Image (tube, rainbow, N blue to C red; front, side, top):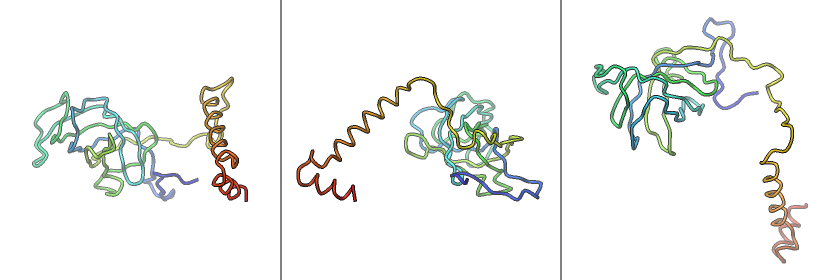
Length: 182
C-alpha cells in the first residue's frame, strides 16, 4: 500500500530511500509567539509527509544572513533566530540532505495552525531497517475488556440514527429517510 509521505526508490542503487532516525537542519524561526527550547515537538511538513519531530538539541545559533555562529548550544530560540538543530521524527520519515535531493531536503515547521519556521536538512542519520513485520502491517490488536471509546461510539451512533429516523422529522425527515434507504 502507498501512504502519504511514502518515497519510492530504486532497490538496485546504493542509495535506497530509508526513514531517518534523526537529522540536523538549518532552521529559521519566523513566527513563534514565545521561546523554543530543546524538547519542542511541532509538526514537520516535508514533501507530502506531516510528522511530529522533536527538537532534541539546539547545536548552534547563527546570524540568519551571514551564517556566522553567534552561540554554541543555545538555551532557547525566538523569532528571527537561525540555528542548526537536531530533530528526531516520532514516526518513520524519509528525508535527504538538501544538497543531494532538494525536494526531500526542505521543510516547514508548523504549530498552532500556522507556519512558525522553515528549514533545510544538512545531514541525516538513517535507520538501518524500517520494515515492519508482516503481521503488524494492517492488523490492529484486539483489546481485552471494554474500551471507554466503545461506549461513546455507541452513543454517537444512536444519536445519528435518531437524526436519520424519517418519523422524527416530519415530512422533511420522510424525504431524507426515503432518499437514504434507496
